[in-house]
Length: 254
Ligand code: PGA
Image (spheres, protein in one colour):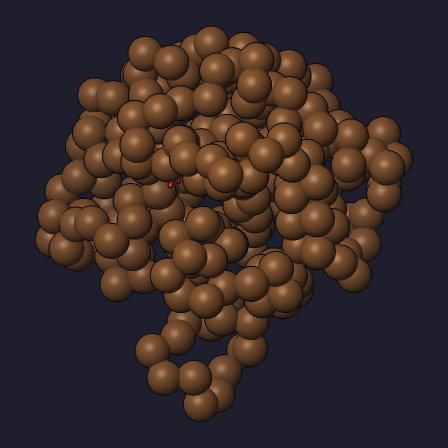
């Protein structure tokens, strides 16, 4: 992390866990984190939990995030949630292009780009996820894969918009598997992501973007990962559902 130029962010990704009443209780149990000043904390929760979590976090500076949005403002898109709907509930962040959405819900680089642009236009901060599969890593094409995902995700964005995005590097082989990238391997890719942004938008814009690592981050490995110069925090799945572990990860980002 490098706090001179960009924010440190620890975001929980609850995925499809916790009912609204469970979410309300769990969010309230995280309120002691309100005293943390060094890191921005966000809870990316199921859409249906957003009102309960917003209420539980009222008067705190823990932010609420969503895990997906549609790219149209409204219309005949049964089952979808729009950016204005999320904004109306005071949502600040939205995860875009998580590998589970790419894998199970047909999300493509093109929809990721459309959703990210819609989020920015509507006043949300997109957390854009990229990451390679084990096969791609083994074949030595990680950088090509990441570069293409980044390039397509940020298509048509202005420098001012790039300053408002967060990128999450989540190697697919590390998500929910207990296998974490080594700090050095994760740093190499996060540094490459920043270099890619620099090649399109210049050094000043690139250094202002927070790049998070995600994939089996826990209270034990968080510090070594977040100490890397180009890793500005974490996107935490499993460990974000345990108050102790999530708190320890936030503390490791000091
Ligand atoms: P994990 O999930 O921490 O459980 O590996 C991370 C993510 O999918 O965002």
